[in-house]
Figure 1 (tube, rainbow, N blue to C red):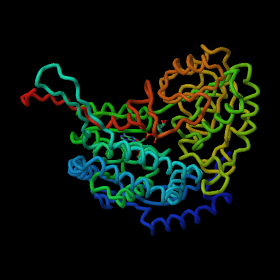
Figure 2 (figure 1 turned 45 degrees about the horizontal axis):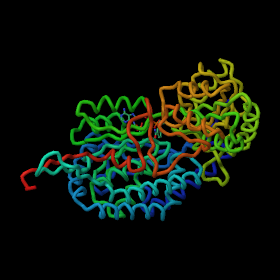
Figure 3 (figure 1 turned 180 degrees about the vertical axis):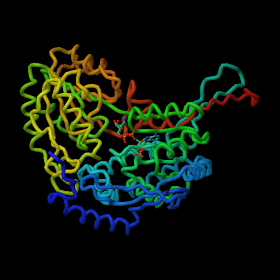
Figure 4 (figure 1 turned 120 degrees about the horizontal axis):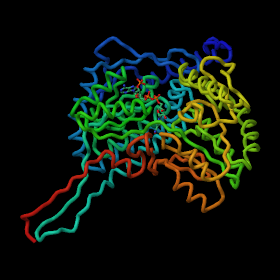
Length: 508
Ligand code: NAP
């Protein structure tokens, strides 16, 4: 089927004017911005280049943001370098209060930020507002955690000697974030960084800079001093080269593809920067014969179709034991077929568009490869009648490890079912990937719950649940899914240096 540009589709076209009107109102409120945010103020880029931001549901251009040059990024690094000492010198309580106020402002503007997020990213408004609230929860968590960066006094090995261990902020942080969670991925990095006393230069994804600018605006209103958070969108290669090349940037925190993560790691090697990397996943979702099938079904649907399948923790491979395979597949296909696809601002929509045409082509490539190797489509399988980048929720049976979708994230609404016969085979199949981010399994056998969660080589494991997100838990991957953790007290540690102070000459 030749896709209609979705803005030409009579089913989607009315949203173009509606989105434009809503965004104009946000511009009036100061929440829609198009300039860079450097040293506490909006400023144009030094060059003329601009990035077009489109509504992925209609293809309509909704904003044109400034594109930072290398000099603009350098100015942001300089602003951060100037700001960081003052910010670090503020008391932890002070920093906590600013974060607390930022969290409150985000919640007050939850709906507006949700509209902005849906407009630039495409996810349903309820999910967008949920993401905004979850972002605020991270900021609240780190408002609390800011006051708990405790040190230690170590029992001494010598008379008259005192041994102190303290934590200090690492300094200037370069943060690079993806488009799939335009608000959350920023909050998870920026909140712990500034709680720790660091200053940040943030490069949001080119597809979704508007949420980043709105968050920065609210941070300024909350009293965050100039230079502590700077936002520079622009050519990723150029911005990345400045951030990784500048010696004043002491840490790179990145969320995105494993490929770009590797590149940033290599570029950061020259100045031996610290790195926090949240990279791609390839989550197995395992259902054993003894599982509560209703719960497994609900978990699989939720985990697969959230954000139209465009999350790093989406079930990418659904592995089902022989005894319940056919029943689960049949019930799953029925539910998937009933899910409503549409513009995220329409009530009742469960699945929005994919981010762009390249994302749709990747889904089609995975489907064609799977079909050629013997998989069967049970539902969906095509671009949606809405046109553009909408895709039908799709169910595949007969998937196997030789297929492309077994080795790489599909990042779309495709649920491939793999059949297995015993526990050992399931764990081996689950682990047979370079990724190690999230995994899920359903069982009512307590022994198996422990054995399998210990056997899975993944940083996050959901047992009898498909929803593992919580700001108080450490999130991150093993193997090639990354380095370090976000969330919880461990997320703060990423932005702290440990200093050992050995004091003598002050008496016994
Ligand atoms: P991506 O292509 O790696 O882009 C992520 C960010 O890196 C964007 O800001 C992008 O900028 C920037 N970037 C691209 N090339 C760069 C370069 N040469 N130097 C510096 N920065 C560069 O990933 P994506 O397609 O946006 O996001 C999807 C991926 O993120 C998936 O693999 C997903 O699994 C992963 N992800 C992981 C987590 C996690 O927590 N582990 C969470 C969410 C997503 P532009 O936008 O300007 O290109």
